[in-house]
Amino acid sequence: MNIAIWLERTAQVAGDSHALMLGDKIVADYATFHGKAAALAHALRERGIGPGDRVGIFAKNCPDYLICFYGIWLAGAVAVPINAKLHPKEAAWILADGGAKACFVTDDLGAGLEAQTACPLIDVASARFAEMTTGPAADLTPRDDSDLAWLFYTSGTTGKPKGVRITHGMLAATSLCYPIDVDPVTAEDAALYAAPMSHGAGIYAPIHVRMGARHIVPPSGGYDAGEVLALSAAHGPTSMFMAPTMVRRLTDAAKALSLRGDGIRTIVYGGGPMYSADIEEAVDWFGPKFVQIYGQGECPMAISALSRADVADRAHPRWRARLASVGRAQSRVEIAIGDGRGTRLPAGQIGEIMVRGAPVMPGYWQNPEATEKTLRDGWLMTGDMGQLDADGYLTLADRSKDVIISGGTNIYPREVEEVLLTHPSVHEVSVVGRKSEEWGEDVVAFVVAAPGVTVDDATLDAHCFDNMARFKRPKAYFALPELPKNNYGKVLKTALRTRLEEDAT
Image (cartoon, rainbow, N blue to C red; front, side):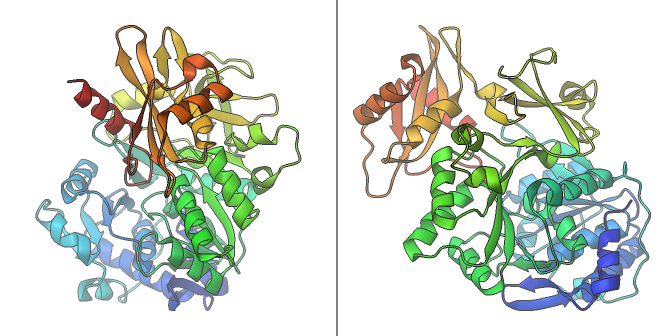
């Protein structure tokens, strides 16, 4: 099934319902949304772009982003969304690797990209794009569940990004898990695109299209906490995806403005570690508005979910352990914990998280070696370490490459980070291993102090002594004004390790 059929069906029964909004401005109802996408599909076909061909999108968040998605899919082609924060050279590499036949851009990004690629670029603000979206309409191109819909490139923090093959069936499976495992969706709701549409926020667009919800793009085209609070208050109920660092910033902004998040219905957070201290503070301030998901590009947004009730619960005898987890398996997947050979481990033991089910990728784009390493006997080997408890709650430890081995003992950085974040002087922290001739690796912490506070090493050391085993405590603390992060808000531990190596030389 072509995922774009959901737009066609919604337009048939709710064509006059508001669909696309830029801030307060209504850009299109569902009939217009579908009409523009179908016209774009026709224009792409006229340019020789058809089933299986790749078409890039290198743009900041804008209503036309969704028109591009659905125009590409209606034509039977494959969307290749590229994070707008990437350098033009990086974007050009992705277009070349994916063999894109065209790329939609916003004018702020197109000029830089044009000098780096021979791929035809189409500015969504141009008269050319306007003509492409107002001409004859194409019928939907039939697609099978196994056909490619989205070529998603990983963040590439350890080398060139890999292209994850996301099929129409994967998008449908992830979408149908959303109302079952994450949050119900109705036509009265609005999806607010605070996070990049090239990533998780865009993955959640199809289910909101299927249910006839509104799609609100902030005029800034990016993430501004004050803007999110204002738009939600004016146009709620809103739902949105956020990385944990975005939730932290939203809480800080709301407290500074004495706002409680009126109009916000649901914030789905994921894409990196959410520390217990941060989510407790967010729930205390905003109330029960949060749901956590755990996924990877290889199984987008669909591995596990921690429900709104679990995130807000303070009565269960194990509520803290559950809050520190990433929830239970979503409906279309199985989760297991394995050793290095893929042998399943019993509940309570830490090992590599393995996943199989409908939302799991069939493999990487033109990279059989990486595919063979990552997919084993039908299981996706996530590279993340974790454990399942007897009730099926999955708790992450760390990426396997992030585990610190000191004196032959495994130390999980997240455990140390959780302890440090309970100290009032710590705003953000990241823990990594530093080479040690005596122990193999030492634990070290990079700390961002809370506003108006100075980090004191001796105080943090005492705090660690009081809250965890002595061998786990950091051997050194480094104060930073901010932690290095990638384009999706994940902390770049590789950059921190590089800094340690440079200091050592």
